[in-house]
Image (cartoon, rainbow, N blue to C red; front, side, top):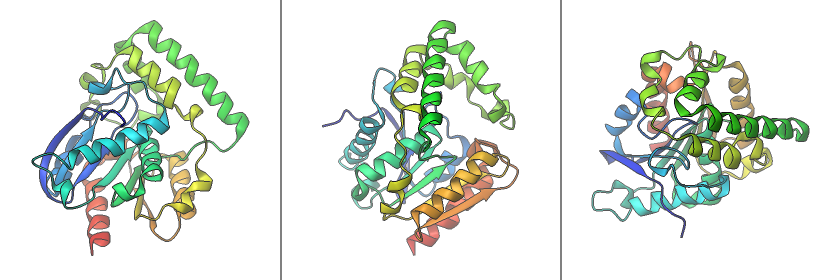
Length: 267
């Protein structure tokens, strides 16, 4: 039985949700979107392997997928659990979206739907993937050399996060992570370590929402390609004026897109 991940529980209602955050974050980094989702149903915000309360866990993507499914199953046995009567919606952002995609492929019956925010199913070019793996490993070495706090400042200064306000970056929560945990996450579950899942997307038989920001042109293009590969049960939505961290930069617009999609798939 996979070890369940650390999690924070909030909310109650008919639409349970499991959240998986991005690299360097924790389950406490969902901001106003997490609060909005908690008004609709019980929210289980996970700490991914190597992060937060799961900081000591060393799991690759396959094992992380199994741990996500196991944690959702464990939630269904808890005393206060809307998970008992309705399968949860699984939402992942960036690294968490890659883990969520693996979890749905690993245990499709465990979830009612999938939301992928700023996601990729992997790098399909062998040489490019090998180079990304080399850079991930070098970055892991760098994290261990400079420490978590300095690395977080360097990470948030990247162009990818140029449109993320400091007030929404959750820096204080990010620096609670350890350098060892973040480095292990990169080495085991970084994009360079991920076998591409493009050929597996058409097998997903769940409603899927692929959400991106219009300013994040690379991931917006990947998202549209991904939705097409999944097929008729997938919908791609772009939030205008937002970048990679679309749910933190534009939480209200993200919540509206999610609410409309959840209402549509709920009948």
